[in-house]
Length: 167
Image 1 (cartoon, one colour):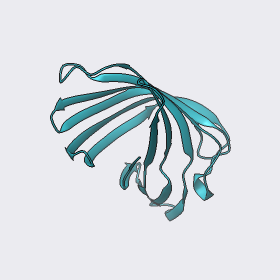
Image 2 (cartoon, one colour):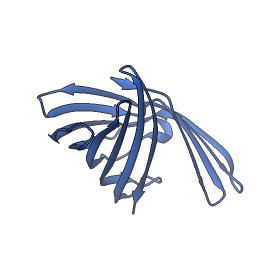
Image 3 (cartoon, helix red, strand yellow):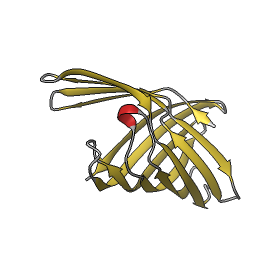
């Protein structure tokens, strides 16, 4: 199980958004190459500030995904990253403002490159099916993300994560 505390800051056209959540990932190996995954941002709190609308706050439980990871290329030291794919489905779930009315999901090609003894880079690309913020439409988006990890020990990891959907 992997969990932590994460803060996100976003700004666009005079509006600002801050999100605080507890991302949690439960992984269970099914075989040498397959892994079962349950993942969620769990308890989530957002604060959105807009010069015309003021400040709005929301708290709730985010949707939970169920998925599989298939690992098909092993790492070769610092020369070659490990590579796999992750498929996730998010059933209708969530509370309050984080509730969804439809199932969504994503499919990603992922890599894990240990380029220094305590450092790794994890880029991924993929496609997703999302629900619109008004919950009326489903739409597809391309995905790109990258995570830079610093692992001073086996039980402690610091990371910087960035990503964006591409419409």
